[in-house]
Figure 1 (cartoon, rainbow, N blue to C red):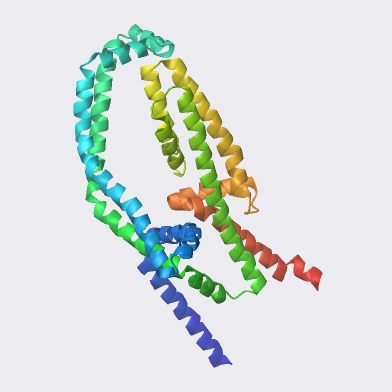
Figure 2: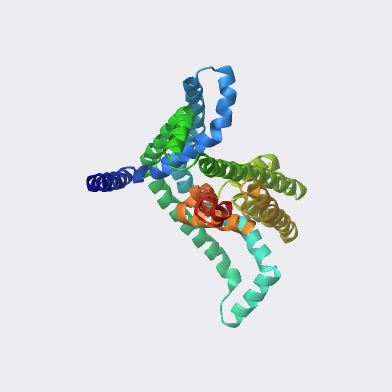
Length: 357
């Protein structure tokens, strides 16, 4: 009996040591590997449809992986190739723009607005002529922006090899999880030392949570793109269809979001059409996004997770803070699995077991 105990201690101690060493080996690839798993989960319904035409699961997985790779890699290479060139041209264009009447028009527009006029008057009392300094400030801002973009653009160009390597890891994980994901899922489920109904509760909760988060993101991104597109059409922004599609795509980003599209559009309206139209677009987008983000999005994500809205909000915000963009999915998954474990504990060791006895 004593020998059996020593064997168990040795086994679990050695297992813990090897698990730690395995963690040290894989931690540099954790983020791209996790994205590969998540992409495979998202692409699984597509795999089912492709398999109706291509009977081989391996061939279907190869086709989907190649499509995903081309969709991501080719635009990224093109963007990196043009980033430095565009940054170098930025300051030249800003300098030429400053020499034309456009910057004077912008200066006059700013000086005739009530807030800027009030500020100019206060500064004039202290001997500072804002009207003369605004063009200089615009030039300095353009130069600082150009220098910043050039510096970081060069850094991005240097790191393109690292990006391709990480994406290669993610794509490799994506292919194998897409092809063999059902096997890995069942193996992990069989390895879990719980009763079958407890396993079903935990794994079904995880699957439903990820599905609900993705469904909520897709629905809200579509609604955001549609509402912003309508606003752009109403207020006369050109290329509103393209910008609406860009808004829907940007709505999937955890940082920046649709503001990456409608804020520059509002600034363009401010320059070309005046304050009233620009403020109208800002109000329209702000109200629509507030309704979508605060009411529709939590309801869409909450359906299927059984999490309170506050818990879901904290899970998303905390997940993004802890894990970056990956936390958008990891946060709700962690809270949902933890809640399932608490329910298993209550049934096995808590009041539910005592009542059953």
